[in-house]
Image (tube, rainbow, N blue to C red; front, side, top):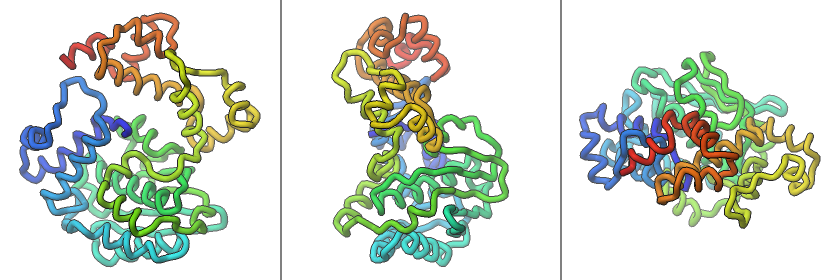
Length: 331
């Protein structure tokens, strides 16, 4: 399962703490151990924490709105929309449902030519001081929409009403597109053609999806048709002791297109080949340091760095600490 940045884990925990729960007691109950310098947690741990907060607050909105939203609302809505033909119809029904049952958030689907916008209004942002629930709610609707049609919907733009946060780079990983802050409305923008695609999920699949939620939301369900996903698969699944990072031209050839076309496609997805390689190296480095006794030199070689010093500089840029200090914090 995907790794989740500690910012999101801490903020999910804070949702319960603000309601009077003891954070250490929650972690003990869930058998989750967090170290002082830890940068990421397993998606499975994040899912268990969110499930705990949902259940103990009896609030799908995680305590971040004026009035709670009782558990079961989202499953009820999801089962209802499954009967409609297109993603546009499903979103319209889901939006109508939530606009009827709560005043703590309102949504609107706008379609104009080739462009579609899913707009959100949160009238009480003070209830969500670090914008955690706002981002989580956007993730839910983007991932759930992608899951319904089994296509990962590429976003072209996401707008926020708040200023650029400190965790901006992590938000870029969640929403791989252009970001705009201090805007008058919160919205997700994408190509309208996805609204015409049909639901391809069964009731049995939906039951499984809801049972495991929010795990599938964290790991971004939907077929991995993005070029970023294809490149990650090529790099990560290559049978080699060293991370396989071919030239961009070789990569484009493997994907049966020109380098210029691939570069343009990645730009549309809000990423680039260097960014993808950087993300993979960062996550693998953290995994190696957390889950093995490999030396810094060994890890540096495995990730394709020319020398350990280069790896150390890169790791400190990713996490704020050196690899050796990060390793000591795990002991």
